Image (cartoon, rainbow, N blue to C red; front, side, top):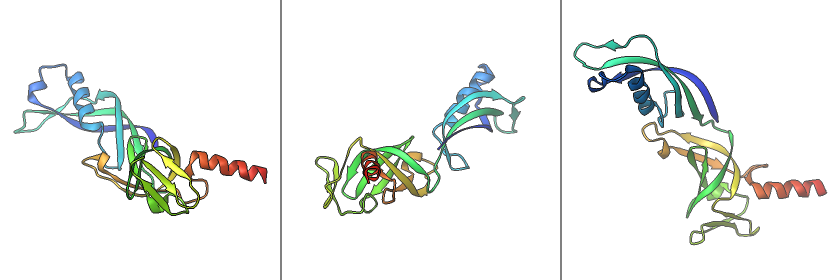
Length: 186
């Protein structure tokens, strides 16, 4: 889920940047430090905007840099277990598929795709139900539920996110629409 929040943090302006405009230097350094990082609340900061200095910076004895408090708006992406996501299939592997949603990818294990035995066709990048012939292809849009989250703070793209589509109302959007049409006909 995306959220926009007001935050504060402290950035270190190194000595070689003290001859620049401090407001601009603080903005650039804050963007480098904050964007693309998972913060202490396990939220991925996508964008830091409206960065402004708060008061004068502080100098620490023995350190030539200036520590500057900043306030900023943070566009964050938060992973919440049991949350429903909309995404699309981006890669098929022998054990399942990766689904891209927001800025991250989640793993959809073959046991969590449908109530049918799933055959993996890696050559054609497809997953096919053995009895139903229902197929998932690259770029198919799906609705899934987040079932596990293991966040890698150092490299958010390496976070492990487990997904399922084995519940009512989840799956390939085309399948969901077909199910709804069948229910209306009954």
